[in-house]
Image (tube, rainbow, N blue to C red; front, side, top):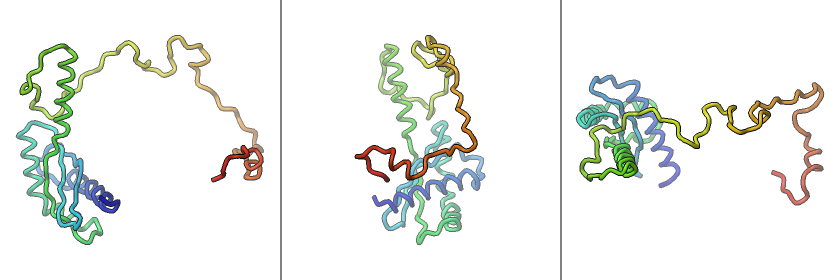
Length: 187
């Protein structure tokens, strides 16, 4: 894919995300994020990948709302962008977050030593509920100034030397040339 198409895809992704978050006001619209846009080379069609957090029925409802709002989004894109052609938008559910969650769940089950059934590993939610992480041995200290076993001078922040008023911040160009190493190229 060319750099131009990459830029167009990224621009469409940003603008469609902005339209969804600011201009669409449907109560059935869940928490949707535009993760990727793939545009055909002739700019006639764009596949829009949408990640939705929630239950499966909420995800389907959000995708249906976005599917019905494509004409509105195309009109808004036409106002905001200076493209020769605004592509037809085809919304598709991005389930990469679900697959990642399933892999994390499987790894946690294997680490705990439990038997994992292939069908039971998937969950109805698209993302796991966050839990507070307990501190483990070898973790970095919460306060970077409190390093256990370090000498006291290593934990204190360094102070910068005050520069006299007449001293320049950097060397002038002639002193850089004379002070540089002989085999080094200048930029």
